[in-house]
Length: 65
Image 1 (cartoon, helix red, strand yellow):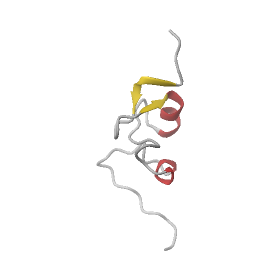
Image 2: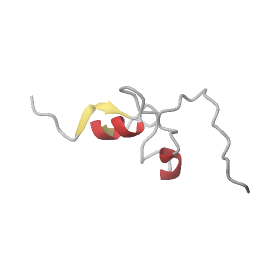
Image 3: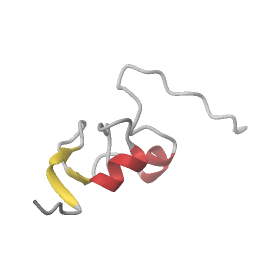
Image 4: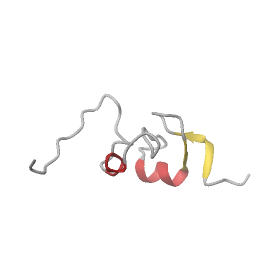
């Protein structure tokens, strides 16, 4: 069976959008992604929010206001 870039079995746990295997590998944890480009802004994806559990606290930014 040929794998496509976006497999219908790979879905964002937050919004249900289809995501690619590569997206899960880069932004997720294990085989799970908890956010995607459809439901999270890019800055939250790059800070690791797609791999973070919903009940896990977000770390405070080290930047001064």
